[in-house]
Length: 500
Image (tube, rainbow, N blue to C red):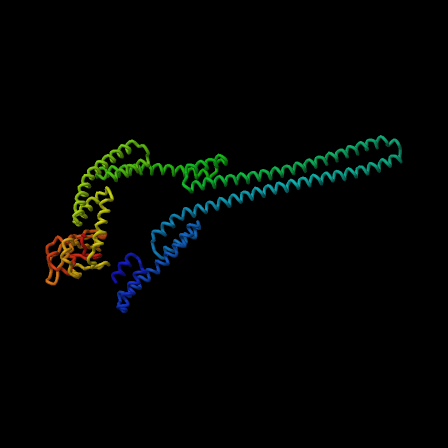
């Protein structure tokens, strides 16, 4: 039940249900275990449903199906109310959806404009053809009239020939009129042909204008697409150049003009952010310098110089921090060498607990990996010379509870070199408390020592040279007992070993 509770707190519901099933095999009717199992099963179902929806939503987002992705994230919020991730993704999708809608509206408008221009060109062509047909009809009518007039004149000439020669002058005049009419008909025909050719040329000109406008709109769209791509990549400087090219090509283009204004706003914001970030980094560096945290100050001053390269104040402060850090490290080096000398001396005499203490102090100075390597080496030596492994998996001791671990007596020839190794975890890292380790044999307790359990949740390894205690090497000890005072404690590996 306790393992299930811990797993449930970490939301590892499958493992928690498994532990509850083990508990229910022992007590099938336990009310708390059954209730917890139902609770975790319900939580697991909700988590599985939520994760399934989020997986679909994330895939739609990757595929740029933003509206469908938003619907899925909203479904996830219906499963897990107020979920931060789904809420954040919906906020991120809203501008993307608006941008897609704007792009679609622009594309539709361009297509409608091209269709309108094509329709106007077609109407101009039809009107030209109708005008040419009208002029041709007028020319034909003039020709027929001329022919009728010619027939009439011929008839009159024939009548005049029969009537009298004195009509010759009149007929000559009528002949001149006939010739003039024919010339007029020819002139009208020529005008009609010229009108037809002019109408066809005008229709061709209108079509060329429509095609040129369509090509111009396509060029504008291509230029806008290139600028939008750079804008979406946050390459604002080059994007602004491209939008300006659109404005130069199409004076007053509303989309490009708005984008240029937006980029100018972004530049202004970035300049303000850069100044704020620089000031924050300098302030943090100065605070770290005042607190004598020189390495931290160096990092902050380097960050400030990343925002404003070659800034004289930041450069000077960085140089001062580096000098102070170098001076600090030089002072630490003296301490480090003393700890290493002490650790090496104890290592050579197999006084491993004191050697580890000295190496740990050197390790905390953070200058080299040598002390860490020596601590690991001591651990390997002790592990290789292990006499008894009294415990391996972690067990929990309640406050005041005693746990005894028994073993066979140890050969007196190796007792003086004995060590006890204990791994401990503090399940309540907000507390510090003592843990008592006792040892004894058939006659009772012979001695012991106290370990301070620190306020940390990290595993702590204690290596205690038990062989230095008189009652350990002088008596036949066969048990070790651990008692945690005032607080629960978890005991891991417990071994009795020797230095050689």
